[in-house]
Image (cartoon, rainbow, N blue to C red; front, side, top):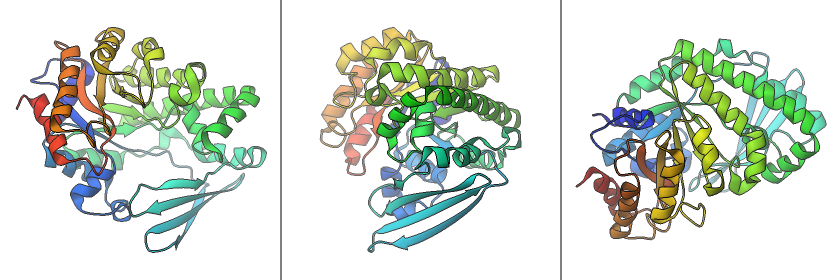
Length: 375
């Protein structure tokens, strides 16, 4: 079987020659494999960087590419300035019929970039322009040309999914100056407004899925996660604002015979029952402590029991304590726990609890991959 075929079989709960082993290679290790720093890496097509990395380690994996909805009456300008030899400050302006928005990001040679200023600084002033920026386009006009090109270039090397963005809380909070904390206050204080915005976001995303499925042969969609997890916003807030979006995305994908994979960081024991009924096909990464709470055989067996072989688990090998600080024997011990807990199940992908750090010894990565392969 090809790496992509193994991943799809696991997503569908179908028999395979062995479980896929899919370390989350995102920024750090692909840049390391390609011998570039983070500024240089930002110029490399992401899907190609992942292809080279998965092929280098001869393992399975997943990655994302996108198809964006055009908003014709929005224009963009960008300015860059250097702050020392290693840091690039980029200021981006979006000019809409409802006003101008500005964001500032910091790009570094040694770390992935991050936001310094976000689009929405004053709610009353900036919300109309931001809404037009993110929801003002017609999903029926989406172009999948780039998506299909990337999928052809990747081939069977790994599962390249179509990114659907993020659940509702992240959709707003990632654009709000003040981030997580300020977004919690905003949503709490203006619940009627955000309830309406949530419904419009769902409608927009469902229409986007419909358009992509009509024009593309993509097999799987992916919904990401920044703060949209119970570790950050708690079970009640997550159920109120994010669960309806996730369920709507799963329903939309399944109507077209496609799959949905969600990223869900942090602690999850309190919502395992919810995760089992969202309609998703694959969920990752079921992290071990202290970041998560899926520890050892007991934790893994609780996940399997809750998911009831209806949803695929991906992840669980600790990226810091085990892959960075541990030994190959430590890695093999965790892999063995995962394989034992899910013995006989087709709903398993052995992966990592987050992206693999650049300082991870290759011996530990090969211990992970070879153990799943039975070598």
